Amino acid sequence: MVLDFPELADRLERAHSRRLALRPVSLSDAWPLFQATRNPLFNKHLLWDRPDDEQAVLQRIDAIVDAARRGRMTALSGVLKTTGEWTALFRFQPYGSEPAAMEMGVWVHDRFWHGRYSLELGRLCVDAAFDSCEVKKLVGASAPENRGSCHLMRSVGMSPASLVTRSTESGQPVVLQEFALLRADWVAQKKEAGEAGSYASVPKGAARIAAAPQPRSWQDREDMAA
Image (cartoon, rainbow, N blue to C red; front, side, top):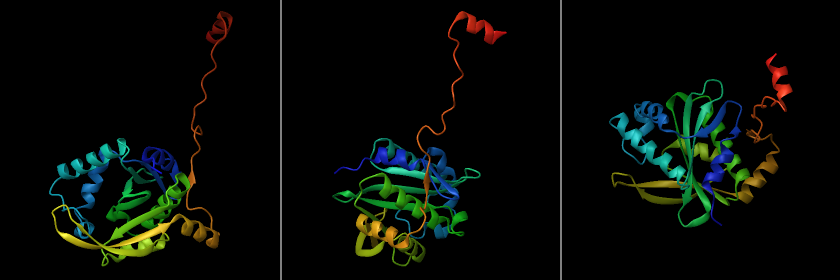
């Protein structure tokens, strides 16, 4: 089974939670992301170096947008429903050589570290992903000392898996704790919790604007012009 990332993106773009909505990542998201990187804590556990200027972030987002357009990943921005303000970038991409698994990652602007926005976004994206495609396993990875990220993955139902070593973009080896959530476990968790869904989805065609009636004859045209 090969996962269809463009189809997943199309479905997730219609998903929304109580405060957040999802939309495709765009180059304009680089500016709020750059502002987030001014906070040293934002960069502490990333696998890429703190950008020195906006151009470095623009290039990064440009590459993400291009990969999404080529169907190599699903990349979405979480925005506030009330204002459209950018809150986070959420990505799904292939996981190793497992065709039915996806790895997810999220960058949240430091303005939204409090207020449980990360948890709301995480539940939205995890539930919507399982509902929207045939993925069998979701995987996340974080530095073990990044307690916030590890807590988030546990909170969306994931369990600790393996410790793995990866390299940062500058070539430094780092140890990461992987977390995983199988589809069967996700289904069991939802059944046991018996809770309301974490998101809603806008049906296709719901926002269509009714077309003005077209005149059927020259007499109709004269009547409409009168």
